[in-house]
Length: 411
Image (spheres, rainbow, N blue to C red):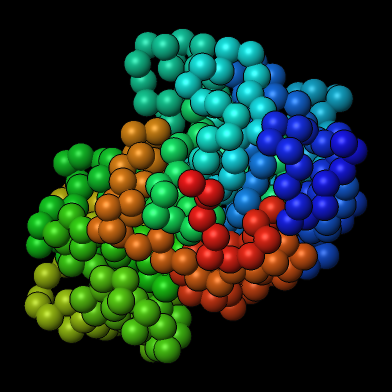
């Protein structure tokens, strides 16, 4: 079998030589609408410890926007520096759902025909820092699958390490299973992975981007753990969605204009401090009491980090997993050291944390927060909407081999 059409199912375990994939190539680097194109490429082969998965649906995440632009990392050039024979294209997608179609040598606990969800990190399990018992997310070999590692979920077949395959809960549709593991596991680690600064019952938590994929999962996890999330939105029309996701209150950030780096001019600095204090009062109003957030859930970066550091409670934590508004984070260090606050970086999640968020969703304690479901041909458009900040609320998905939404695995 040379090529199978999208939406068609070849005989189980029969791997076509070629497949459709949404690729990025260096000569197209730029905005996602122009950089991402659907083409036919060779289907990868599962090597030792690897699994080939027929992708049914794939989640949309910000890292494929970075891949499209070729910055901050030129992922194609990076791989070709390591291996001159590496493919000249990038297939993004760092989460998805599908059916195990082939397994490589040494794979023992996964079999052809299994329905799986795919987590988005890879590492070398033979490396000393993993074998000595460290969290593999701290391994120097750790890379983001579908970004630093190729053959992500935006192809008909994805190539993953066997440990990336998680059993798919039977109650979920293909698109539900594909939409939340990247954002949900990332949020779970941010909120529970950095003791002693973990969400405790009654804790106020400030959640930036509350209507997005990360924010919607963070609010739900916070509530499931007994905390009290306050969501920040850039459009007041998103307030009701945030409250459905568990927020006790919502702040409209468009009512403030103090964003960005700490001003050096004294008069401007005074105006900036007034903006910080006004935002703090808005947090109190949304929460319903005069308490500072024990945890600030960050990911916008340069625009919001100074406010996050100011607002965080004494002894609290600002935890960040991204920088969608820019990487240069500037803070007033006096607020950090005098109040003994913690500024913590966090990146995706280990396998235990991935399973924890899957269990929370499977048990009904957390919703997948499924947003819009797109056809595969629309993949460049939804990435462009995400880059522009006009994407639908929640965790958005493209169908790959699934012929329609609302379907569950047979049996």
